[in-house]
Length: 77
Image 1 (cartoon, rainbow, N blue to C red):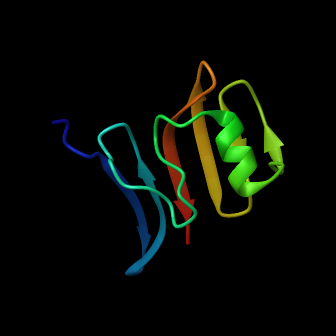
Image 2: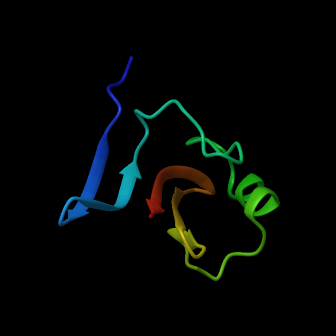
């Protein structure tokens, strides 16, 4: 089983963001998981504020993708 990878950005003891990759087997509070489709992400979170071929971005969430599949989640605090 892969080891979850978590990268954190901390400033003066305050967590600013956390990035989770394919070792993370959990889900967001709304039920999005790594490995889900872009379509599911949009169904759950609505139209993104911005998007490219590699990511979709909302106010506090960035989803990185590869071939229309969620590969990483970045949560901003």
